[in-house]
Length: 449
Image (cartoon, rainbow, N blue to C red; front, side, top):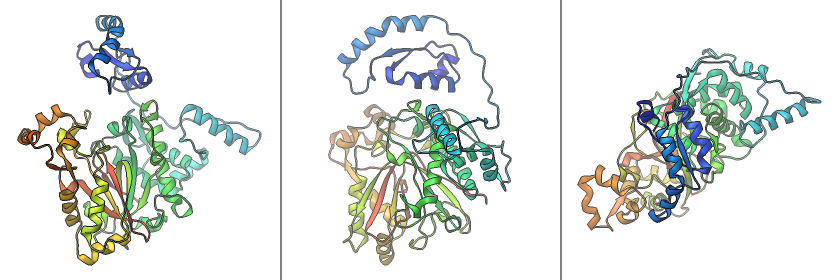
């Protein structure tokens, strides 16, 4: 709509009451601050035509008025790199000042709900010490708010999350990854779904920083302290630099505890395969961060299987979850980010526990063999998948598959190709792998040390 208005085509949107603030914020980001809308009591989702007509009729007068009146022309706003703002917080003592700061930051929406570390000038300067990049350098322009993620502002959020200076290079690489168009940051940050960032770190830096790759790698507790603060910093960066604030661009229907922090290291000692980052095209001695977007996690519990097929049959059952949007969504065709004009595939992640990895190793199974098996066995009837996708899009994007309408029980792969299944090893000794439903493609970046 913003693009149509920019070329002189009048538009008006129907916006549900709970989405008004997001509509206004999005309009500012897209360069049309006064983008017209008319308010309706609720979203049209889940309503039949006879339920929608009264809502449209009630808003019709406003719709006509806003469609016919000229819209005020706005001067284009130029983004400039500004240093982090300095705020004075007072209290009877340091503890009272810290409490006041936390209350102030929460009132402004800058926090994640947990106590924040104070990003004092001294702590931020310490975080920046030794960095080759200038504090004012922009690492990425982050959607959905098109915020300038400078080195200094990344450091501020790192301090707030409890990170140490040696963690900053990991976060800078992670910000580069989520700023890549393939990551589809705008889509996943603004969705009504519980999209959560998942950070995977692989290479020598894992041991150097003490990133947990084993038991409780996704937390909580002391063994995963580094994992926790790194994942938490990314959430704060989503909010404070990407401007994806809950209820204000982040329109998650219910939310998820996974959105607070998810970070783990690759357990290379337990892996029978080449390191994850080598698979992504990096040198073995390199340290790399890979950013995924996940909808949810599903346990793959199998303490009895002694051959790969047995464990993967259980995995395939976990993968076949029609309630997750990306399951079967390839039937709608390739998805593209409207801004970046890039085409992506939804990819899911299988986190293989060491016990299951040993079974695959003994049988000589490669990652590709696992992908091929899952692609063949993680399938659902066409009738179930098409019921949750867009039939019109399927008709347009897959004309060669229209015969499926006459064969509704034909088993269809939940993901488009075998390479949509990503695989890595992590965790402790127990027969419990984890299957993560993903959205979009993971993006990897080299960590500059």
